[in-house]
Length: 203
Image (cartoon, rainbow, N blue to C red):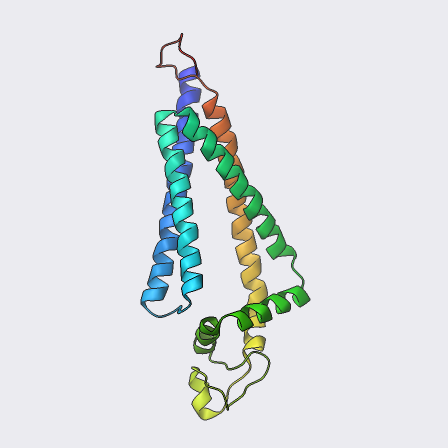
């Protein structure tokens, strides 16, 4: 029974970390694909997504190696880091789900004003110009600009922003629960003695 419990904890932890590795590679791949095909020109956005993906990849790799080798130190650090990630992600997910429309509009305006490259990406993808008002005296990458038939971007962004925030918050909340499951599995697995090891050896 001890062997079954040990193997079950080990296999569950390995499967969870393989899932995290796949998610991290997907994040890196999507960000690189978006930059390569010119869908996103902002280096800060692409760099941020790739940075999070690389961080998640190394955390998952530490957890996977620790699970395979039953390495006490690696499992301990993995458990601490995963718990910290859980706290941050759970907080951000709850904030995304609880944000009011006024706060949402303020954040969108701040994000718009802070990055020229993000403005160009939004104008090109949503076919709009300006945030609250269209100014044909300024440059704009939207197709509608040449016809002088553009709408402001604020209206179009606000149509989808609420749905996107709810989606991101829901996905983040789901993954935060997998992270707390990972913390519990690591704690349980770390305190189990390997039945194949020397019975007189310390954990």
